[in-house]
Length: 106
Length: 139
Image (tube, rainbow over all chains, first blue to last red; front, side, top):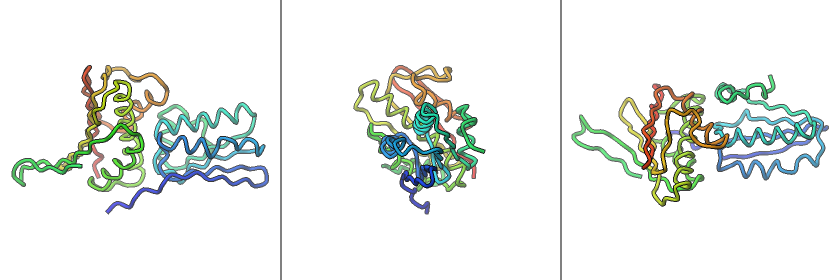
């Protein structure tokens, strides 16, 4: 029996100027609004570094990649450093397919 | 959801059919059902495959929205090896030879991702609808 999928969640930790957004579960079009709601105002915390951690994401679709790119663009415009961590092989492959592997942190 | 077995057991075709309302939130439910009825995959293969299925289902629902049809999207899982998932919509169709058939980065990118991830994906499209067949990974 296949275990049920982990529900989507996005959590934020702000510590010593580093703001980490950890996303888990299945990140798809139906959850983009939730992601935007959670992350929409975090720039008021004025972090020096933002980390978007996708390590616990089990599925990513193109709508989610679009949301990630809009998120990245916001901090680029604010001249705030952003690291996107997507360490799992399928995540790296998706970013490669979409020509976006350059946005990932090593 | 229907589970059909046409013909004698030795020759039967087991197909699970899901009629999907035009609602993006139903995609997660559909994925869950498909994962239950199809053979288990390793984590990365599952993430890639069902990510591609999500792209195709999203496109099908959006095609129905564009065509303002009340028809449902039909998802068929053929459970007999080699397993296949087929997605049928009654949208306006598109030219499958185009790499990005629909406008917009995300919706157009979805099919390109699915094609990259699923070798052997085939598309039948006309002005009365589209069927996309996604061969299931061999385990």
